[in-house]
Amino acid sequence: MNYELRQMLPSDETRVLEIYKQGIDSGMATFETEIPTAEAWDMEYFNDCRWVLENETNKVVGWCALKPVSKRECFKGVAEVSIYFDNEYQGKGLGSVLLKKMILDSEDHGFWTLQTNIFSENEASVKFHQKNGFRIVGVRKKLGKLNGEWKDVVMFEKRSEIV
Image 1 (cartoon, rainbow, N blue to C red):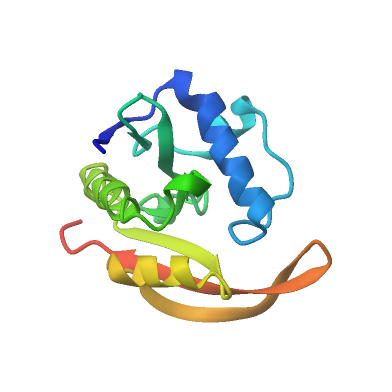
Image 2 (cartoon, rainbow, N blue to C red; image 1 turned 90 degrees about the vertical axis):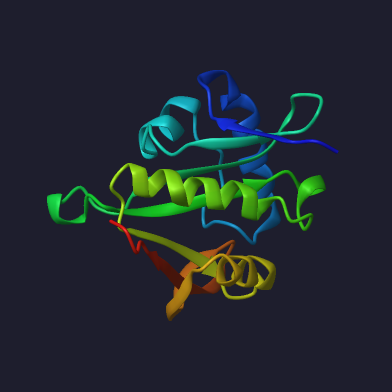
């Protein structure tokens, strides 16, 4: 099967949110429990460094985007990574294509640190980020509750070697 990597367009918002809902429903990807509106999602993420992967029928099967970790000027080059795939396309090695493109794009836009927080039981995502050059910074025990259950979060970062 052939895939196309391209910048995310406003017309992708419905599909992006559908895939995000799958992540919410899994209970393994986010503390969020409800899908945001397209407007709220758009405001949460940077306009740059948004990418999608389409299959040969032009259906978006995965997306990634960056959001700020702080509004403070000193952290303008630090961003949090979000990457999500349709359930049917997980575990096929496609995530690395998407993430590597976003990493290169983030450096072109002056980001020096990418970070992400992953539920400790999400072993596939932990291994995926390690494989793609992210290092574990630490584990935050019982950081928050999801559906009444405490969740530990593994904190990762990737420092740019060129920014």
